[in-house]
Structure formats: C-alpha cells, structure tokens
Length: 148
Image (tube, rainbow, N blue to C red):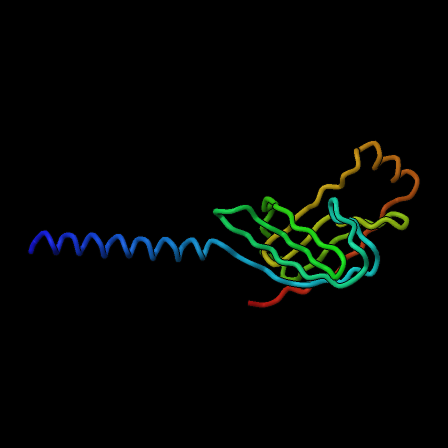
C-alpha cells in the first residue's frame, strides 16, 4: 500500500509539472494582428507591394523564431526576424517609408512594445549616389493594431 501512495504522488507531481510547463510556454508567445493601407507601390525587403489594404500578424516567442506575415489582395510575404528593441513608450503603430522620386521603401515598423528596422538592399555607394541626385524624404503610414 505504501508503494502505491508513492507512485500516486510521483504521478500527480509529474502531471502538475507537465501542465505548468505547457502553460508557461503558451505565455511566452505573443501575437499582434493589425492592418495598414499603402497609397503607392512600396518595396518591403524583397517584396514589391502594390497600393492597397494589407493585414499583418506578428508572432513573438522565446522558444521559436519571431514571424512577421503581411498579406494583401495581390501580394504578401512572411519573414523571420530578431527582436531589435523594446519600446515601452510606443503606443501607436507606424510604418516608416523612405521616399525618393517615385520609389518607396519600408525602413521600419513600430508596434506597441517594439520596433523593427528593415535593411535596404542597396550598397552604401549606390545609396550615396542616389542621395546626391535626389535627397530622400520619409512618410509615415498609420498602422492599426487590434486590441486583445
């Protein structure tokens, strides 16, 4: 009988450890969902997004790679990213776009709690050459984040 009670205690203990660890893992993941509208065709990393309405989701996790998915009626992409900086002061979402002549390129994304920079695929000499011809300006596109 004593052996049975030890087995029972060990079994219940293991069950509790499994339940508690799975709930901790579920809390380590955070998902943001939102939308934005591009008024002009815009390059975002390797994707050229036509003007239109887009939805996005950002999944951040301690155990798995962070994922950004952007989808529109005609174009979309999914990319992995490394969290860059937590911004506790950032309460509104914004997509920052560099504009030079008719070219628009997404340079960063601000969402509640963090900020992401995106690399411009031009070499430094190409950027300097273009900047000498026409200085770049920037636009900010409003990003609407769904509340949980």
